Image (tube, rainbow, N blue to C red):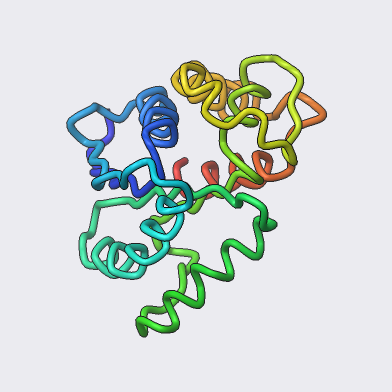
Length: 178
């Protein structure tokens, strides 16, 4: 068991279930995992909620020596880099420096929506550009989190072809959560 607390900032319950399943496989005890309040189900409110709350959570995590922050937000119709730039601007406007290499922060941004990752991770055909997966596959969140742990840490590779945004996320997890 690891001793650090992990704070999860995410858009919805599917994100939370996925992150918690992954982190449980990484030997984090459920008592170490703290999910910040999840916004209601009113369309794009989740992304806005996560983005506006992020600078304060980043600042708070820096003050706590052994805590980590996991942020999960869908790119929706934007690309992954553009979504991250939105978060950078939010930090600039709040006078909070952006994520440094030594910050214990992982920002996970699935292209379009995380449900396409769930489909990929559980072995089905996927399409990162499609919105058809949305809310149809929330039941796959937990098995997908476990599968990501297996691919990222046990196999040390994703099944090819893999969603590019998931490859980026897997590398980010390995960099920050050894």
